[in-house]
Image 1 (cartoon, helix red, strand yellow):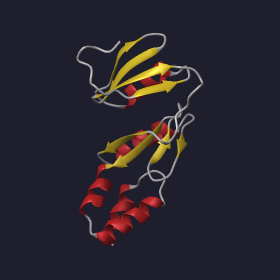
Image 2 (cartoon, rainbow, N blue to C red):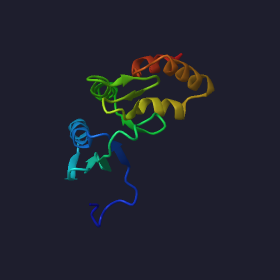
Image 3 (tube, helix red, strand yellow):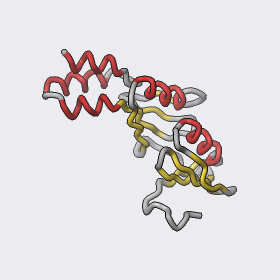
Length: 150
């Protein structure tokens, strides 16, 4: 199924019987995304440059939080876009920017600004931002900014 120009490493996602539905859902959320190929068992798709393969493998295996996909979001609007899409219709909110979509796949929806604060702040600022984050489900950039500034 993989093309000759295929990347060396491709995340492979085992779904019960929803691989096609999941791929279509994910492609609808991310810019520059597409279904590359599909069959009854496999769907190969690309999310903003990341190639993935989904398998209709049956109920033997399910997703856990041990593996997640992280999205670095430009701003609060993008955080809201992904968070709301993943947590509605059967998804679940988690802590500190983690959530599960309706297929059970875990995502980390993280604002770029959070990473910038954690990489540029002094010890007190980093501690304050960390403490603010620990109280959140979805990241709220404005609340992180307040913690960073204090």
